[in-house]
Image (cartoon, rainbow, N blue to C red; front, side):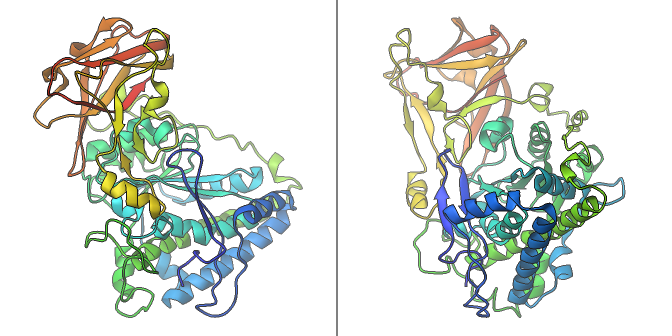
Length: 501
């Protein structure tokens, strides 16, 4: 049977566009050993969490430990392996010594004590999104299915957001971290292994994540060569680490029925992306369960620390100050990371999905001064994938807001701009052109700024050709008005992101 995907698992796309959430616990294991593990789903899970958060801490610890032990037993039995074998392939880049996982353990303990959600955001490519399979078979959702029950038993809502998209690198969504991934993240995953090997964009992803309010821990899905060069700056601050499933796969795949004869979807499906470079459901499951074992081991340590607190404090909530205190970022290692976007976070409106924050269309000025809106239209050039993909449970929508000479102006209202602020945009450009080569008029608060837009970075893969620009000229404190108009026939301008700070 597929891990965590029994009848008791309720899959839902949340009200926030692109926010993937699965509410499930251990599925029935009757297909494996007839133990019939408890299944929690939907409304039952919310009730279970509410009850768990009101139980005595000692009871929450005991029940969380019991549920975790059951999950570990079932996973190791599935692969005829051991916890040690399934958790050894973690590379830590913190060279300061001590316990590398201490930050993550503390965050898990904090979530238990304060009854706060523990939030994981996964950025990545089509294989990460689970293309070829059902979205619930992608490895982030498999990890969630395995650990949701143990976390819930301890009174913690484990939230996993699979925000992967096919064919796009980490930039430019990295600069829009709050709106793309969420400001409440505890653990951030990078998995753009097929579409990005760029140390500049990798460092930018790390820096933007670390500027989120909770300064999350960061995991890479491969031990990329440049990570060792970033260890001194970010190894300790981000508890930077990599988890690679390939050594485990190579040790198991010739002997384990749980990996042999892999295919797309456990049951028959016609999900887009059934190609050789995408993993089948068994490989996705291995990735997710390996992560569940690694982070489950840390969760057990958090329960151990809870028990230690309870031995000397009746109420662990008052045992210490649980406030998270982000540390200041070091200077960027790469000289190509300009301070303008390496040292600041941005508000964004995006056309791409999935994301958790603002849609670009929500920023369109529909006032009388803007003639009630715009004739620019949102078009999805990836509809052949995104349409069938929705039927398989995931979003992969690389939409663009497009304008031509016939569609006139589009105006965006950008609120809460700070002093010495910056306004910018990203768009799909022909690979041999810059914004100054394109017949488009860009107005910021009534002044032309297209020639004042400074180039940041581009993102070029087989899927996209995105360039990003920004300016500080004529930026006002408070609300800003940004407008675009195509000036020549035969040109289509394709916006994907508008950003400001």
